[in-house]
Structure formats: C-alpha cells, structure tokens
Amino acid sequence: MNQLRAETWPTSRCKNQIKVDLVDENFTELRGEIGPPDTPYEGGRYQLEIKIPATYPFNPPKGRFITKIWHPYISSVTGAICLDILKDQWAAAMTLRTVLLSLQALLAAAEPDDPQDAVVANQYKQNPEMFKQTARLRAHVYAGAPVSSPEYTKKIENLCAMGFDRNAVIVALSSKSWDVETATELLLRHRAAGIVKLAPA
Image (cartoon, rainbow, N blue to C red; front, side):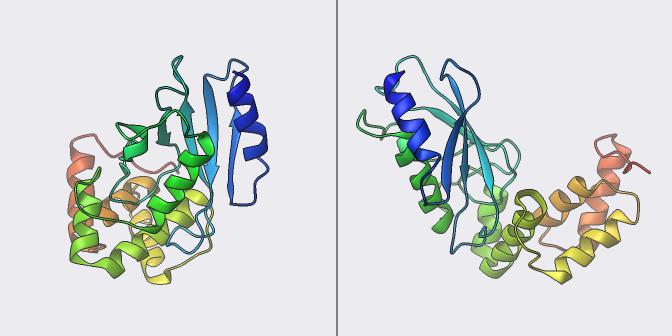
C-alpha cells in the first residue's frame, strides 16, 4: 500500500498528460487518465480502469479503457488492452507511471499485427488515412478532442436524423469504412433484430 500511495499522488501531478486517482481507500481500484500528444487522439482525455491485485508489484495491474477509443490493440467494444507489460513482460520494478507512459507510446504507434480489435486493424491496413480520421472523430465524440472531420460528422448527423442512436451510428460507420449505404443496412438489420433502439425524442 505504501508503494501505491507513493506512485499515485506524484503521478497525478506529473506533466506528461497522465494522472492516477484513487477510486476507493483500499488502493485496489484506481482511475488513470492519459492525453496522448502527437497522435490522432491528441486533445482527448482517456480514462482507464486500473485494478490492483493483492500480489502487486510482483504481478501486473489489470487495466482497460473506459473511454471509447479506435486502436488495433484496444477493443473498441470492451476497452480491453493488448500490452505485453500488462501480461508476461511485467517486472516488479515497474510502476503505474510505467504502465500509463507505455499506453501513451502504444497510442502513438498503432500496429495491425496480432490485434485486440480485428475490425480496427483491418481498417488500419486497408486505409491508414481513414483509420486516422476515424480515430480523430471518436476522440472528439468520446474524449473531448477538437472537431476533426466535417465530412464524417455530417454522415453521423444524417443517420442520426433518421432516428438512429448516435453511438450505434458511430459504431456502424466506423466498422463499414464510413460508407453510409452499408452502415444504414447494418443499422436497419440491428433495429429489426432489436439490437439498435430508436434515438430518444
């Protein structure tokens, strides 16, 4: 607990756009936040759930993104993270600061091989510029980054005007390479199956 206390409070004041705050007084759950500069996610603030095992620091913390993000190594659905130091490459000398800085580095270097999210990785391979625009758009919608692509924003608004839920629209357009026709077909199929509900009036 003393090690965690030492890690948590200085980290929350560091200048690398990362911070860690307590969720409970037992130091078993923390809330991390990163703001990755010089990436498609720049300007956004991304929150992470960090759970500390009883065997820390000999075993790694468990982490996932709470804020939705578009990255091959992070699930766009659950926020699960594919990062070696959170698995078999952890060392007892590492800290929470190490984890958050490693995550910032991960966001700066998207790689499509052995991904956590195959849909994102496929878009990255097939159309890197579309991947960047999708990541920026989602950074704006979910993480508070500045508006990036008026074209993509207009497509979202057009489908929302048809009565679809905004989050469902973004998911459909992102997964269908921003093709409005195929995204609409997906939304209609999901609506018929009861997966997508109408947006609130």
